[in-house]
Image (tube, rainbow, N blue to C red; front, side, top):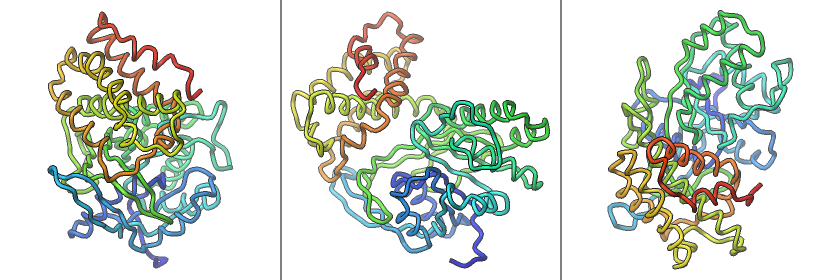
Length: 372
C-alpha cells in the first residue's frame, strides 16, 4: 500500500461477516467502476488472536467462497476482496486511527457484536484509548470536530433494532456526560446515522483473512434525507421502513439460531455440531417447527406481517444448507445478550400486538439461565 493511499471508508470490526458482506459489496461495486473506497479496517479490541488477520488487510486479494443453493441449484464460486488496503489496531495504533478518521474518512461502518454498544461503567473521555466502542467513536468524532472537518455518515451494522438511532443516542448521551460543548452536539446532529439490517450466514473463516458464506445476502438501509447508499449493489436495498425487515431477520432467523444453540448447550450435544446436523435430528427440528408454528408466526400474523410464513420457509432452507459448516458453538457466543434482543424483543412486540397470546416456550427460553 502506498503511504499516499486515502481511505474514505473506515470500518470498525474485523469479522469474517463484514468481509463476506459489506466489504464484498463495496469491493464488487468498485470493481464495476463505482467510485467507492478503499477501506481501512480497525480492530476495536485488544485481542492478539486477530493480528494475523490485520496483517492480511494490505491490498492483497482476500477470498470469499460463496457456497450453497441458489434458485434451488448448488453453486460454489470464489470472489475476491480488493478494497481493503489497511488494517490497524485501536489498542496499539490509536494515533494513526485518529489521523485517518480526521483527515480521510467520509463514511464509517461498524459491526462490533451484539454487545458492541455496551458502555464501561464510569468510563470517561481522557488521554488514553477508551475501552468501550462508543467512547472510542466519540473520541474520534471529537478529534474530527476540533480539526474543523465536516460531519460523517455512519453505517452501524450491529444486530440491534434501529442501530443508527441507538448509536446516535448513546453518543449524544456520552457527549453530555463528558461535558462537551453545544458546538460538538451540533456537529454530532449533522452526522448521518443510518439504521440498517444485515443478513447473511457466514459460516467459516479462511485464514489469515477471508470467509465462506451462503449465496443469500441483504443489507437493508432505511432511507432518510441526505443519506446516500454506500454503493450500488444488488444486495444493498434502500427501504422506506426497516421495522418489517428487522423483525423478520431478528425474530425468525436469528431467534431460530438462538433456540438451536440453547438446546444444543442444554442437552450436551457434540461440541463441533453444525446447524445442518442439528436440523437433521427430527426431535430438534420438531422443537423449532413447533415454536415457529405455535408462538412466533402467530405474533407476526397479529402484527400484520404477511411475509413471515414465506420467510420462515426460506430460513429453514438456509439452516439445512448442506454446503455450510455453521458451528453451534460459535452461535452460542454472547448467548444471554442474544436472547434478550431476539426472544425478549419478540415478546415485547407481542405485548403490543397480541398481549393475550400464550407463549410458554418463548417465556421459558428467555427465563432460562443457560449461558449466564
